[in-house]
Image 1 (tube, helix red, strand yellow):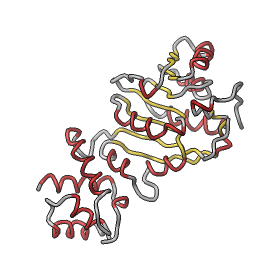
Image 2 (cartoon, helix red, strand yellow):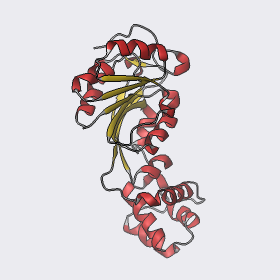
Image 3 (spheres, one colour):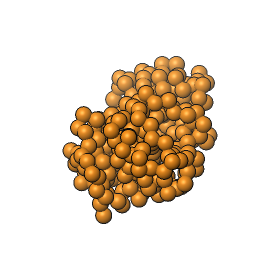
Image 4 (cartoon, rainbow, N blue to C red):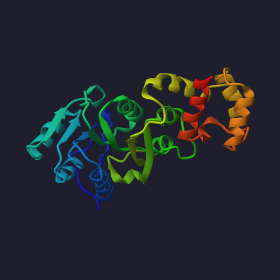
Length: 259
């Protein structure tokens, strides 16, 4: 089943609106499992905003298009706040809240970085490009960005969303994913910059496999210690950084810190 939007999206704003009711229901269902105020990124014509209101929780919709923001504001409950703003410049509250949004595909990476750096939110339900959703969730191996944020966040792939679920129809499919802030981080937040620099150096290090790349990125770790660690975790000599889990990255960082 599809919902209909009265006006097409603006190409320059990367607007592709949801018209598939099953996808909308899935997103609202995921948000319903969370607690706290809701902030929607890219409210558009209200495909998500209006059903999210039924959760009877404080709701703020952020919309860049001033005309759509004004129209949606007239259609929402008085308790729903529609804010005309660019989410990349929007100052989110530091108190607990939940993020939800159908992100503009051409700004997915920038918005994800903004979200990961933002304080306060506990859960995020996001619709992004399919390949981005797969990479963030570590399907087929973790990317450097995922590994850099894994100690503090959990990424989960929910489902693929076909291009026909949007209007106008984008050139690629979407992917629905969730991001949850860990209650117990795997690495202390004060070590975030050092940890992320370490991950960057491993991913960009020279070598034909993880042991060699680790030796280049962390010369303070004895090679014998690296070989012992990789054998203990049954990591092949030809394995690449993308094959490591969140827990293994955290353990490697602790080994380096101990040295």
